[in-house]
Image 1 (cartoon, rainbow, N blue to C red):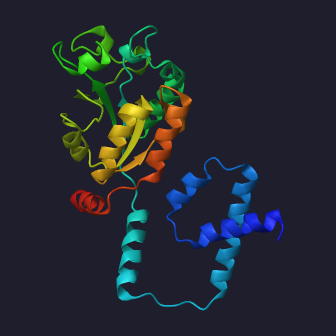
Image 2: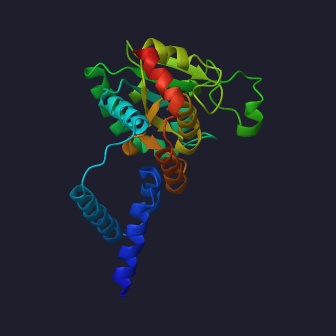
Image 3: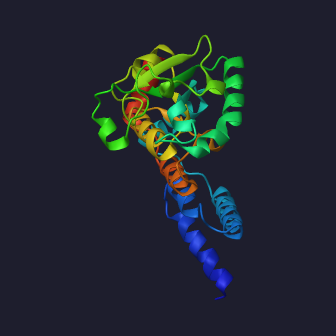
Length: 256
């Protein structure tokens, strides 16, 4: 058996293993382009073989699951764009919690917000805010103090009339905030997370959102981590997860 045959055999084993697509995607994330292309060919070839077989009727239980899954996928997402922690204390050079890479995403984020407003997609600014005696400042240093310029939104991204503002004191936008209530009022089931820092606020918010049944999208050009490496780890983790099934079903029933 040649090296190429062995590689194809390994890819075939992955295809027939039954692993969920997100797991496979994460596993292939760092694979060379040639391996990814070969994987696509193997998957398509196997699909062709399956289509050549006589169809088998699914059980009533499996049929019900398939129909429910198709109905959910056919539903148009009700998105909201969340702008997380894009504040002066994170973008201004020299600040203790500066995220230098966050300045690079401002033009793309401005464009995304303009498109969202033109399409009547709601925008929610999630702002980190602390009282002077907040013990969190002992660990992270003084930042985003309530009422100070450092806690204000970076000027090019300032909220506009009709946008929503949610304040939170910690990593996740859902903790000790009214975000859940705002999203319920907006009838939202999908969150487009933008801002910084990807491996802190965005990751924590995404994890909470998924557990609450929200679908989560993080556009690569509208997020920034402290480093490229940690950012990619965080994005990979979010891609790996899916909304918690029961919470997702309850959320969709609630929205009607």
